[in-house]
Length: 219
Image (cartoon, rainbow, N blue to C red; front, side):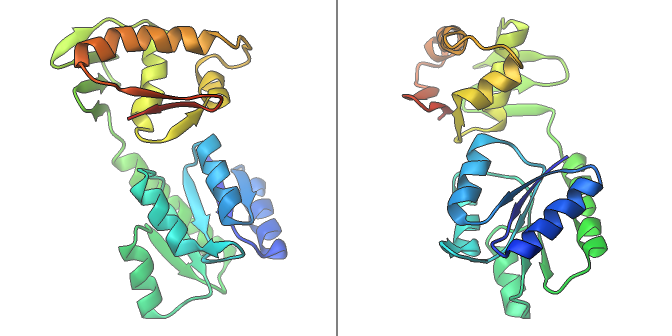
């Protein structure tokens, strides 16, 4: 389970990262809005713990930005802003939970586990984007209601995009998940060309946007 900690206080950030690591979580720590944006663009996380007072921006604005861009990772706000109005604002703007400082780490852990249980309960088995339907159980894909034959690697590649529709995915992020440990720079381009041939021609519209030197985006 991967946790992104967005916290600028050095001692608290270290404490949180160590606490999660000791309980067998994979924890990444970002100390600014910019670092948090980069972390979320590079990787997927099961839950995000977000402080609001960050050195280069407000955590609530960062949360709004994530939700507008289609990021749906569970977010728990951990903040010294502890009034009822603060909590209501955070939840209304897209947070899934709110825990004021000071806090008990065991209580924080219980909140994180609760978020994970809720996330697992609503996990989708059917992914849909525009005219594409991807069934994770039957491992089938339909375009405008018609079946599309994909290889296992093509299916894995499309699944990553369908789970992250609208997000910019870097080349390294995609390659590591489809071909872990394999380094062939042009392999991703070959498979993207195949997906485009099988899906974009049938959809009659652009589905995959290339960001030169960065990666791809399902639009």
